[in-house]
Image 1: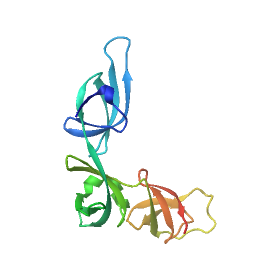
Image 2 (image 1 turned 120 degrees about the vertical axis):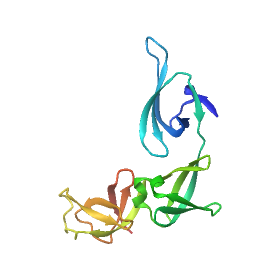
Image 3 (image 1 turned 90 degrees about the vertical axis):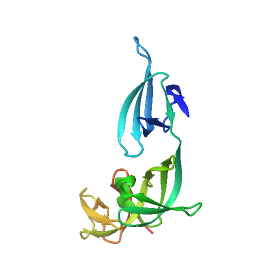
Image 4 (image 1 turned 135 degrees about the vertical axis):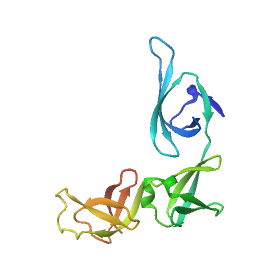
Amino acid sequence: MAIDTSDFKNGMSIIQDGKVFQIVEFQHVKPGKGPAFVRTKLKDMRVGTTVEKTFRAGEKMEQAIVERRDMQYLYSTGSDFVFMDTEDYDQTEIPKDAIGPAVKYLKENMMVTVTTHDGVILGVEMPTFVELEITETDPGLRGDTASGGGKPATLETGAVVTVPLFLNVGDKIKVDTRTDTYLGRVTG
């Protein structure tokens, strides 16, 4: 479907130079002299990098129809990860590089969102927050909650994050998958 710059919305996907980009933000600019233009920040949906691009006002381009499907992670075959569509139970293998750096938080039976365009997998959107158990870390220091220091902890998926000194093996924590940061301890 053809669109022009007046149709831009944050989150919309377009095809540019044979790649699918998502509009992160845009700004219509009308300078005192010269023609109007639109300054954009675009995210490459396959690689995840962000680029800035300027379009002439009214410039036409192709809108990319991106499908998002909730899928459940089943298991890894080495370099590929197998996901199941929870609606029709079809299984799909997705290469590790299509998932990106958040692959270290994948846990069996976890729900993710898989994005596709024309049947081609663009990527996997991980949950923003995950709850995982600490499997390896130095012993906790009892009562040390205010020193502000941290120590590395290996989680059940193999990811390593910095946690407060008082946490121990077996504690369950909440982690932000976008920033690799510890958010808090999960009780219960």
